Every structure is written in structure tokens, then in C-alpha cells.
Length: 128
Image 1: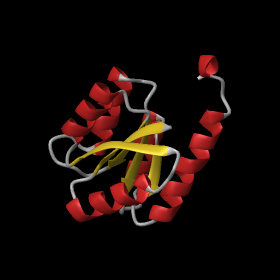
Image 2: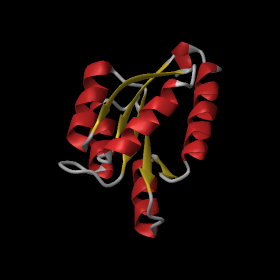
Image 3: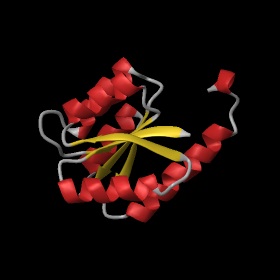
Image 4: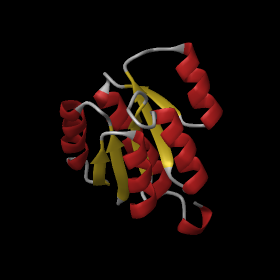
């Protein structure tokens, strides 16, 4: 079971994402946050495996949160979401070695998470 948090400042989208992810058997949604600072706290406190973060959030944006998560808990995978296709965002995500997904394509994001979870399940714990 993969432990995951969701962070997005849009309450309806965040709740939709949480409810949708809760229906995926391999995922245990630990919690959700409305800003990047709370997302980092959730990841560290609950030793989360995956953080699904909106790029644009108050207090600490997705890139800032990803940077903090990489520093404090490097084993957590970070997936950033945005509704804006931007070369700058793509470069920043690449520099952090994190995925950048289209926020409006929820089905694609969930499929990406499922594929990644399947790959992780095939790796022995000592190799992960």
C-alpha cells in the first residue's frame, strides 16, 4: 500500500482528487493540504511515499514544497500538477527531478501513479 498526500488550494478539486484516489486499491490517502507548507509537514510527519502537489499554492508553492520534501525526505516521490503548460515549469520540474502533469487530465495522473506503484511493487525493499 502506497501512502500518498494531496495538496491543492482549490477545495473542490482537492476533494475530488482525494475521493478518486481513495478508490484506487493500491493507494492509502493519508491526508490533504491547501498549501505547500502543510503538505511538507504531512509528508514528514506521516512518512509519505508520494506527494501529489499543485504548482500554484499559497505559503509555499509546489516547487518550493518539492524542494523541501527532497531535502527532508528524499525517498518521497513528488508529482506536480498544473493547468498551465509552461516551458519554465517543465524546466523547473526537470531540475528537481519530479514529474509535471496536466492538472486537467486526472485520469492520466492516476494512471501514471498506478504504473509507478506497480514498478515499485516489483522492486525488493532492500533495493528501493
